[in-house]
Image 1 (cartoon, one colour):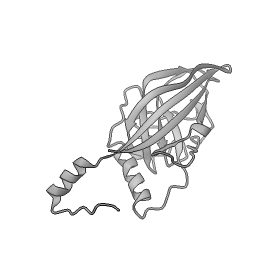
Image 2: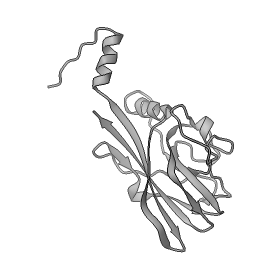
Image 3: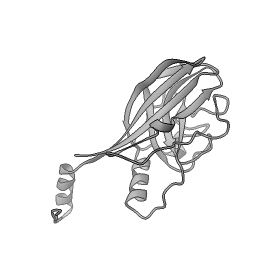
Image 4: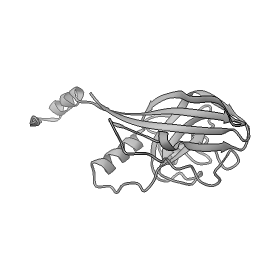
Length: 191
């Protein structure tokens, strides 16, 4: 039987919120292959908090009345000066002129679209694409500084939602025909 909590005023609500926290965390791992050989496998690239736009999407879809996104997509970026922040959105961060300097057709295939973020059902507060990594076949020599998950499929899209974005702890220098595979895990922890 759950305990009934009475809320007396906004100050009381704030105090209750301090006692019961829910944290959403994105974590990224990569595989980097060159000529069929791994340069790194399952390399942990660090974790980040989900931007407010992503948190709002999770709440609106999971608790609110907003319809579920039909698909999510993974992308990579090459903006060395970009540091993700809570206020980042798809409109400000992605696309040709976005803060992250998103990788485009000249940088990797598949052409035109970002690879699908294909997940399995959540378990233990975790959802991941480990079974179906997002794969990028590199077309040019670039430095990849991070990855993201968004609801828009086109590489140049600045519409939709930015669910998660992570600047790697260390960039990856890639060359044409390298294959970079990205695992993006989202965890929700209640404390």
